Amino acid sequence: IGSELCRQICKFGPKKIVLFERAESPLYEIELELKRNFSNICIVPVLGDIQSNIQLENTFKAHNPQTVFHAAAYKHVPMMEIQPWKAVENNILGTERLIKVVQQHGCDRFVFVSTDKAVRPTNVMGASKRVAEMLIQCQGSNPNNQTKFAVVRFGNVVGSVGSVVPLFKKQIEIGGPVTVTHPEVTRYFMTIPEACQLILQAGALCNEQVEIFILDMGKPIKIADLARDLIRLSGFEPDVEIKIEFIGLRPGEKLFEELITEGEGIVPTTHEKIMTLRGEKCSLKMLNGKIDELGQLAEEQNADKIRSEIKEMVADYQPYDHSRPMN
Image (cartoon, rainbow, N blue to C red; front, side):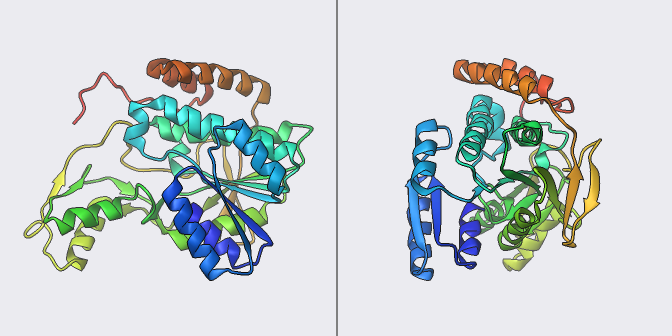
């Protein structure tokens, strides 16, 4: 998502684009690509981590960005169930630090890439993204805030890191089986370029202090049907030449995802594929106190207490029962 956002932003001819990324190889690759294709734009690679106040402060002081797109997050649901402190450190505390530095440097606009898994979350990853959303929503009641904040919530992106499609392709290449969690599991899907176009558009539409946008993802797709289609497109007969194996839902996974939750009213925008939500107000003071506690629990790597603390913050979070045997 981050790389494609950079490609599309460069098409609008910004004076400078700063690539803030902690993974060295992907940063190097996108830097070379953008410099090759957009030689008239100043491309600045920064090997940095949103968990570091010093790195954020130095980067903003050096480059003074007008608009910030925040797509840095841990996204793998089962991985975050095993190590929930990492979801806290990166998805929550990293977002909190980024919000503060954005406000301190008077950025015009901040666009946060969220997920449908933040709606009625059943896993730590989704719940951590919902807490990040709440942190942003609370900036509407911050009298010192001058930045416009946009949250963009959508489903799965085909071909992105963690997408099921590359996994299925690898499994087909080795002759199967193709593993699907459940016969009835469904997900929303969108291509990376389309998702990024709509993220940029939603950021441009943001006229309030804080707005939550949802993207029209169309109809959810059965993962089993997707697997069969990919097998056929690869020249094989599903369930005959390449088997499909159902392995059971993994910890924290749902059969289906949602894009809105109770209390959020959908309002259309001028763009047919983007809607905005009237979100609930929240207390920044209460949230900050809870986040301090979460930070301490993350340092201690106390998984059970992290889930309990997040449950107090996100009322509709239903933590996975880790006493159940895993498949």
